[in-house]
Amino acid sequence: MKRILLYILPLMLSNLCYATGEYGYPIDDPIVATVVGTPKDDAAALAKDIPRSEKSIAIFANRPVKKFFPINTLNYTLISQAHKAPLIFSIAGTGASHRSAKMQLLEKVFYRAGFHVVSLPSPTYANFIVNASSTQVPGHLVQDSKDLYFVMERIRQQLSSQLKISNYYLTGYSLGGAQAAFVAKLDTQKQTFNFKKVLLINPPVSLFNSVSILDDLLTDNISGGVQGFNTFFDELMQDFSKIYQNSEHIDFNDNFLYRIYQDNNKKIDTDRLAALIGISFRLSSANMIFTSDIATNAGYILPKNHQLHPTESTTGYFKVASRISFSDYFTERFYPFYRSINPGITQEDLKFSTSLSSIEHYLHTAKNIAVVHNEDDIILAPGDIDFFRNTFGSRAYIYPKGGHLGNMGYSENIEFMLNYFKAQEQ
Image (cartoon, rainbow, N blue to C red; front, top):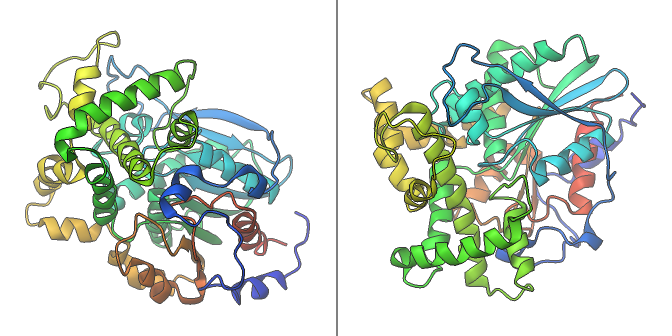
C-alpha cells in the first residue's frame, strides 16, 4: 500500500475528544439532520462506482429451510483491491442490509483508503436472522456479536484463496457500532483477526434506552398517540407505496425517510419528521419481530405451527407487529426467551448486558478502539454523551451537531474516517 506519513496520526489524535473550531455541517436541527443527512453540496467527493460484488455463504447448512424464506445463505458485499491490502468488516445499523445506502457510503470511503471491504447486514435484518443467527431471537448485543464473529470467521475462510490480506479492521454504525465493540472484545479472546483499529460510529450506550427513545418519537408525535397509530400507519403506507412502487430493494431506516420527506416537498414539520423517524424504527423492528416469530415458531405474531406460504398475504400480521413497541417485545418475547436460557437473570440484568456500560472497562483500556459521535444525537439519553468522553478520553471524537448519522457523509467526517484508518497502514 502507498506509504502514509505517520505524522498524520498524532496530529489527528490531538483533535480527538472534542471537535472544536468551526464545524460547517449546515443543519442545526438534529431531527432534520437525521432525516435529511448531508446535502449534496456538502458531501465528500467519492467515487460513483467501485468494484462491488454480491457474495453469499452458508452458515447453518443443515438448518431446515422455511417455505417463506427459501434461501439458506447469508448475503454480504465484497469490495476488493487488486493487490494485497488490509480488510475492514463493516456492520450495518438496525434492520439494515449489507446493501443499505450508508453501507455503500462506507464502502466508497474504505475502498478509497485502500482497503478490501466486507459489508455485513445487521443481525436484526431478516436474512441474518433466518440464516446466521444462532438463536433467531435478535437484540442481545453479546449473542448477536458472537454470531457476527462466527460469520466473519467463515467469510475469512471463504475469501482466503481470493484475497491477499495484510491486516484486519472493524467498524459499524448505530447498532452496528455497538456490536463492533462487542466483536472487538471477543476477538481479544479468540484472536482470529487481531483488529488493528476499530471505529464505532454513533453507537447507543444502552440499546434499551435508545430504542425506547425511538419508540417515543412515534407515540409522542402522532395525533392521538398510540390510538392514532392505525391512521398514521395507513397514511404512511400510501406514501410508501407511491414512492417505492418501482423499487426492488427497501431499507426502512435509510433512504426511506428522506424519500418521503422529499416527496412532500420538504414541507413536513418537525413533529411529523420525528414521527417519521419513530415509524421508520418501528417498521424495522416489526420486520425483525415478524421474521423471528416465523423462524422460531414462537406463536408471538403468527399462530403457532402455522406454515406461512410465500404467496400468503402478510399485511395483517405485519400490521400487528408494527403496533408492538420494543418495550413490549422486550417484556413479552425477548426477556422470557433469555430467562429460559438463564433462569436467574432479571430484566435489569438483561438491559445492562445489552449496553456498552457492561464493557466500560474494556473500552476504556482498548487503545485500538475509537468512537465518533454527535453532541445532539437523538438516540442518546441525557448524560450518554459524557459516557463516551469519560470512557474513551482522547479516542472520542464528538461533533457539535448532526443528529443521528445525519453528518456521516459530510466531508469533514469522511476525512476523519479516512485519516483514522489510513494512518495505521504504511
